[in-house]
Length: 155
Image 1 (cartoon, one colour):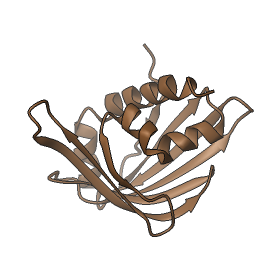
Image 2 (tube, helix red, strand yellow; image 1 turned 90 degrees about the vertical axis):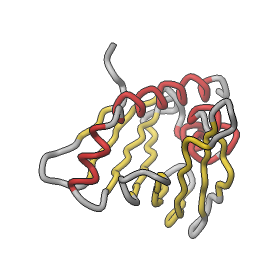
Image 3 (cartoon, one colour; image 1 turned 120 degrees about the vertical axis):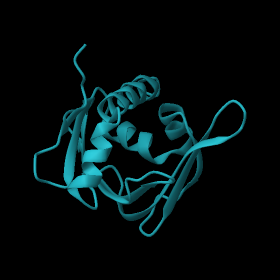
Image 4 (cartoon, helix red, strand yellow; image 1 turned 90 degrees about the horizontal axis):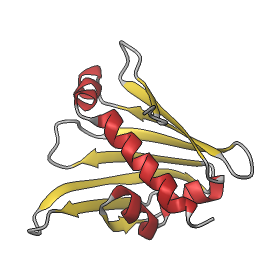
């Protein structure tokens, strides 16, 4: 099955670009990234904090069945333009990847379709290479598929 989310990671660079077209209007796609109840559903994680504003912050946490925290991520929101753009940092705690800078661009393609373009900048080529060794592409595609499935019910 073809993966709908494309990841472009050019050699010799410390960034990558993730692109996905969704069968969702841009307002619903944007809500999927900004409403805690929706984020929790498609990401499969608990939203501890999500301050959708310039200089806001966020924190996500996932626990296993025994209650042990297995994933924690946080960041700061540097730019927030509704239905257009979010610029933020992303840090996965207890991971060797370091802090990333993410530029999320939300584009309407038609009344019912939209595109997400994410540029992710890593501290170094080495940090990006470590990310790409993980099942990153699979995970992003799975999450985006789930996002589209969940949010399409809100139409």
